[in-house]
Length: 348
Image 1: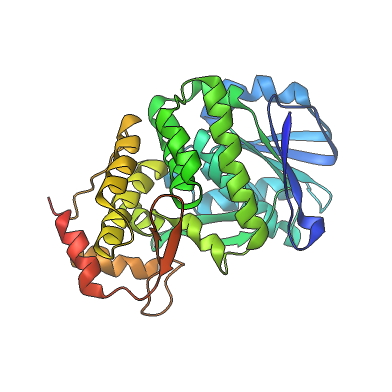
Image 2: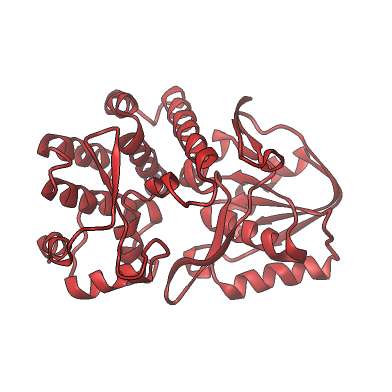
């Protein structure tokens, strides 16, 4: 396997990210594999022979963003109490971002914190959600508003799991790869324009570079107090899109793709991005059949929903905007009318 190490300021919280065929995993004490029916049905036979533990339990949660809520979290915690897990016990998050976020949050709060391991099975989770220790659940006010920072013990990235991934979910992961290139690495973006991520060699390179970039940012800013907020390029808009559509119409990466285009329009207005650069970004998103237009029926209502986001501060909304391709600015001083003008351009 190829390895990337996340070095955190508190070295005991640092951990490896291994890319390649899943190795044998030995766990002292009890282990709970948290998954959903779909992933479990497809891949538990591949995982189980590789996990050695004193006692091993399978905990199955419902599939989908709709179930990333307090009820599912309570179910998970109840199973840990039923099986008498203690602070030496370990959880394995075996699924996409929803499973990873809920498992990580459950591990963070069960008996004030137990270890967990990430084995992400979607491209989106492999390049984004599994790395960095952000965990949480949704509620009616918004996405991931209840959660904790809780770093995993290790992350194992195995592209084997992507063989059964639907095309739409694969594309959702590509959106996050493109996001990383736009805000951090112009050379990587240029390479992506000529790459074919349906090829294993190109895919592994894209995953590896995306994780390297995220690892560097997380090491600098573990708890999103500064530069890590740059990872939210497209997300300020995307979280409102997801909230407006009840987390049902779009996958997270699809919402991020539309959010990136909206952020680009704002960047164009401010002179941070050139028309040709915005066009290149949109064309790369479209190549993977990602949506780039969201019809905003109520611009004023859309704007008000920004304030439910964790990244807003009082009357200030944080917008991560590309400064050309390969760099970014975080702006909290953009006038309401300027933002509304961008939103009105997307009226149906």
